[in-house]
Image (cartoon, rainbow, N blue to C red):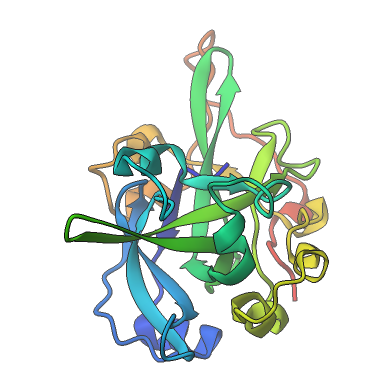
Length: 246
């Protein structure tokens, strides 16, 4: 799954990476949480051109009676998104890119939750595969999104069985194209990343509080155990120093 992520790159950097004019004033975000507004890149539903906009994180399907359903739809399983009622319309024609510099996941270490941060070594941005939808009732309109997830690779599995889908730059155009409705063609973007291209390191409990939104959320820490108050550093192999190698 993906329950928290960070976006710290400038609008200029993101615009170059995503080939989109980012006209939204951005501030560095180190701890983005569900229900908050997130930056997305999509094809405008009427103008048929790429745009950047802010959508609520937690997809509310257009047919939903209660918008509270969005709190349960912050992630969509890639394996079933094309057929599940909550996501199938969006998967067919309303896909988006959700830029990020990294994301967080929690493991269970000796009875306590240990947060981890996953990022590019260079801190350059990448893009989650996302879906969006528009909900409108009684004069109220909400545009929301969800992040697709896939099975974790072997390196991630000890921490969590799921990880977010990341769209490769050469596939941005196809992913965003609303005329591309072939599920089989789109499925090539929904696979797990290889372990050798993934970096993981532990961070402090500072990130656990959604009110904390500063660089301390990303600082590598010394992992601790419940039975030993002496802090010990987790060891990581050399191939874990890089994520999404080019």
